[in-house]
Image (cartoon, rainbow, N blue to C red; front, top):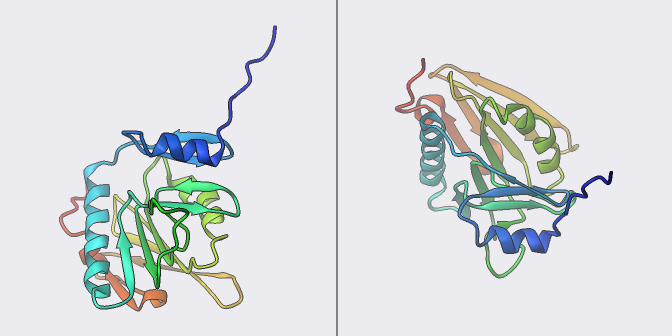
Length: 190
């Protein structure tokens, strides 16, 4: 009996498929991974974060992107769709299509039961290989809690957490503040 061989895709093959697909898929080590849809709290949190950051960055050379902006981590050839991405300065793209960002400054992920371990572990490990990447936010859906990882000058990451709707986080890399009351606006907790 012979074992079936898995067919692996090159990054170029992945992009050709992904750019025609109706659903988003991430890519790593030759494999595509279809992404699930998000529930209401997740979508509200993403909308709120984008709104807050956009208003604060409006007259500055930074751009805020939603989850349709793919990010490539060249060092590990991972293509991912963070929930929110901020880039300061001129955005660098993989090619002329301008749908794959190479130089994020801040990445935000809204945690779910199915992605939390990956977002905290391997995905953060991959993201940390991007030279421009300075701050990582992990936002919990079912309670007001935002965790922040800030890259220090020595390359180590400083951890901070804000709890409760009165909490506020300062994002030093983009000179913004995120008030948890705004992050969780209209989100209903069970």
